[in-house]
Length: 81
Image (cartoon, rainbow, N blue to C red; front, side):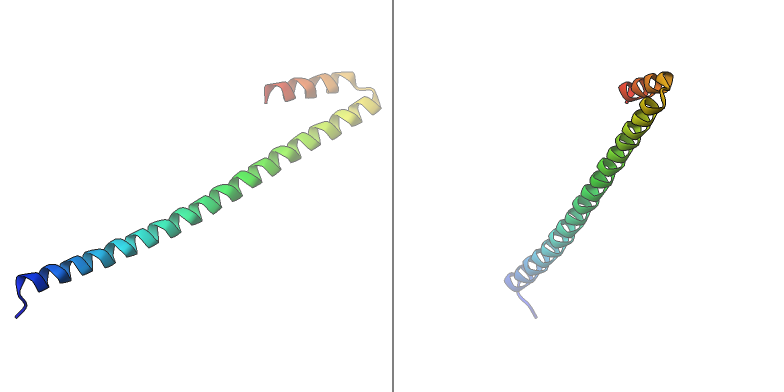
C-alpha cells in the first residue's frame, strides 16, 4: 500500500503531465490560429489591391474614351471606401 507521500507525488506527477499536455495543445492551436489570421489578412490585402487595380484600369479606360462622368463616378466610389 502507498503512503501519503507517494500518493501526493503521483498526483503531482499526473498534474504536471496534464498541464504540459494542455499547454502544448494550446500553443499549437494558437500558432495555427495565427497562421490562419495571417493568411486571411494577406488574402484581404490582395483582394483590396485587386479592387484598386481594377478601379485604376477602369478610370484610365474612361479617360481614354472621354467618358468624364465615369471617371467622376469612380472617383466618388473610391472616396467612399
